[in-house]
Image (cartoon, rainbow, N blue to C red; front, side):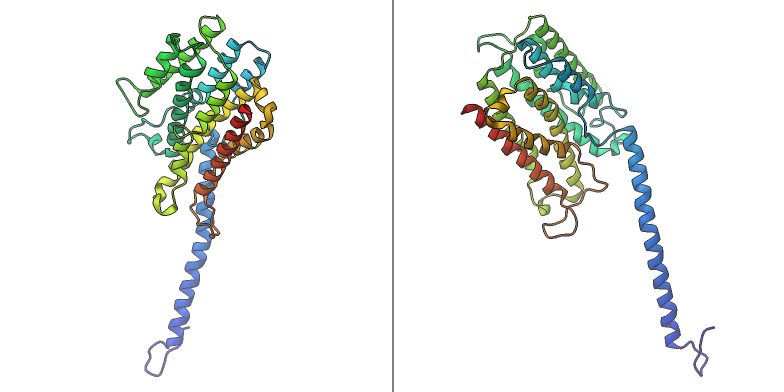
Length: 327
């Protein structure tokens, strides 16, 4: 019962007590709604990842098959076909995933909101292009005067060079699938001795230096090393998942490379290879519920900084592996 003063008005203390009750009730509602909201979000997100995985702790079965079918004693043509299959694997997986290629989805499409996978796919095609571009100058010829395999040339110059966001006339999916088909024909040519693959020690060195250089790894690293003040919050996860796409392509390719050419590790780089692939694995398995941008002394995680540290460590170790080849 509300207490009143001699004039019949509610006492001040009574009003404060009523206000306090409302505040307590509001806090209780917030405390109940917050974990409920987070729980619903977690269930929806994890349900989505059951359909379309967002974390990649294991090598794809296609890469495992390549590892099982080829050995360090295999001939160079077989090794070349195996490396080409590993190179195209991630792009092929993205194309055949439940929601397909998302980069070119129209804004009215529900999948256009899946920007994490779209940015992962942008990183995937970037790394695929970069590795394919290395072939004609180093691996696919015996000398500078030799002609490039026409299937490899078509994939490199025409199909994979196509823009990643074309919806129609022609669509990106159509062009990239043709590029994958061209690489498969190149692999068949290798196995039939109609194409060249020539991996020498200096090519191993040049390949690793190329991967760690300005044109390749410096591109995703440049997206990560900017300060929090320079990166809008809504772009933070875009840059991180782009880097993950690059890492997934490199993990497939380098796993097969180190398997087929164990002499790379025997020349003093075995421990560096182990640490480099461990760092790459950390990037491939990155999948937080929310991407955060805490400062260096914040209780919140700094996911951008963490990814940058993994990538820097990977680059430094891979560069050490390259230098060990030259010794």
